[in-house]
Image (cartoon, rainbow, N blue to C red; front, side, top):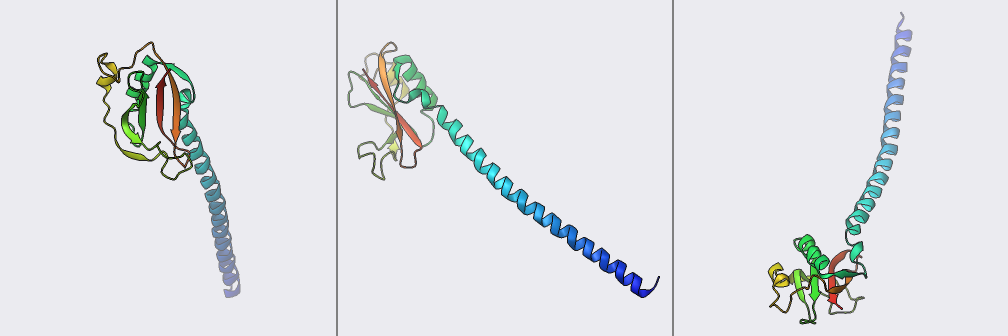
Length: 159
């Protein structure tokens, strides 16, 4: 084999290596875009699924026992509060976190967490307490959403 043939074989090998590297980079870039799109879709789906736990409480009428169950279920969630307004306490009591609902819904502060709520579960179970929730009572549920459309709380008002 002459030097010219060796040089041609070496050049062909280098050209083939460059072509393979280019192909791998092109495939990687297109796969990266697909991966980003899939991650975005998965994130949207995860957000929707996390919000579906609250859809049963969106402008519905529930029994008092369902209100107590919701309190047990959601009171320990971070950045989430539950307000229960009973016939004896029309102002209501907050459980979990206190959510700012005193400003107009268009305000930037609406739906923000103000602090830790003073209410405890034993209050809703004690018939002598003004925050007692009658298991057979009827309550109107309403979701509280912040400016980012994230559900921050639920208010239950006895009817």
